[in-house]
Length: 254
Image (cartoon, rainbow, N blue to C red):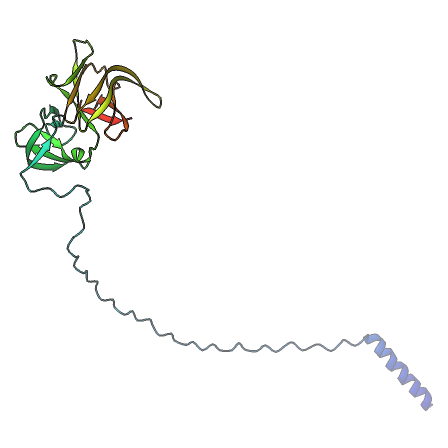
């Protein structure tokens, strides 16, 4: 009887386990949340700006620099100056002023006033009232000849005439040293330079002597030339033409 009761109890126990199913796995405990560490704020001291003392401008030293222009200091006025007969005179101290013509004779002249133009040229005014002369050009001109248009042909000059009777200009060259083998030429402008045609030749022109050619300048591109041998045996060729700016005669070596 006891064995029957024990068997019945065992069966009841097995039946209860089957109905319940497998036992669930034990739950993993959730991690305990730790409180974030408290940040202790350190108070940063405020930046204090050291006041800058007001700027004091040092007095500028006296201006001892040379003037920007390359002209030599003006001479004490008035002073005398030797000029060639071919030196060109203008109504005012710049190249936009009217051309008065040449000095006309070699001589010593008195300069009573100086002025520098916008191009940096130093000019001197003649006491006679004949006009202003470009002193900068005179000082820098080392050519063996000078030239100018004269109102009349000088009596003492070696002379050439083209035979023209209207619009004739008296083109005068002055030798600054003894020259030899001279040829006066008609020049034609071409690409890369001039072509020349000889008009008149003569043997020599002494220092200070003049050569005058009666010619017609047909326009701004019209030019005449003079070729010669200098004292050192060097052959030179100079072109003479009129400026379209003011009508003055310009001379350049080519």
